[in-house]
Length: 243
Image (cartoon, rainbow, N blue to C red):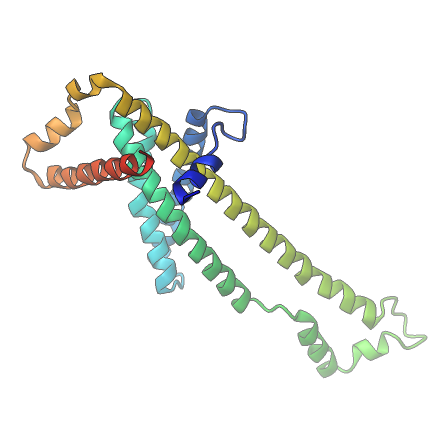
C-alpha cells in the first residue's frame, strides 16, 4: 500500500465523525484566521519597543502574509468552481503552515523553558541563607513557626512540575488538533476536486474574477494574477495527486 492509499484511508469523512466536512472547514479556517490575526500584535510590538528576536518577528510576519489567503478561501467557500482553486491553495498553505508551525512550537517551547527559572527552590534557599538562616529557625522549638523547611520545599517544587505538565499537555493537544484539521482540509479539497472533474459543465464556466484580472494591467492586477496562477497550480497539483 502506497502513501496515497494510506492517506486516503485516514482522511475523515465527517468533522469529528458528526458534522459535515463543509462545516468543519469553516471552523478550521475561522480558527486559522483568528490565530494568524494575532500576528499583528507581534509586529506591532516592534513599535512599542518590546524585545523580539528575528525568529519571532519572522513568524509574526508570516502570519500576516498567510492571513489574506485564509480569508479569501473562507469567503469563497460557497462560490462554485472558484472555491476549488482557492481551497486547494489554502490546503497546501495550511499543510506547510502546519509543518513550520510544529517547528516553531518546539522553538518557542525551548525558548520559554530556557528563559524561565525551573528551580526556584535553590534560589530561595540561597536567599534564606543570606538573610540569617530563617529556614533553620523554622524547625527550632519555641520560635513560633508552624511550617518546616521540608514542607516549604515540597510546595515550591510542586508548582514548576504542575506548570511543566500543563504546558506539555497543551502543546501535545494543540499539535494533534492541528494535524487533524490538516486532514479535514485535505479531505474537503479532495471532495471538491472530484466534484469539479466529474462536472462536465465546468468547461463552459468563465470565472468573472479571472476575466477581470487578465483584462487589466495595473500593479494590483499583476499581484492578483500571480495569486490566481498559484491557486490554479495548487489545484492541478492536488488533482494530479488524488487521481
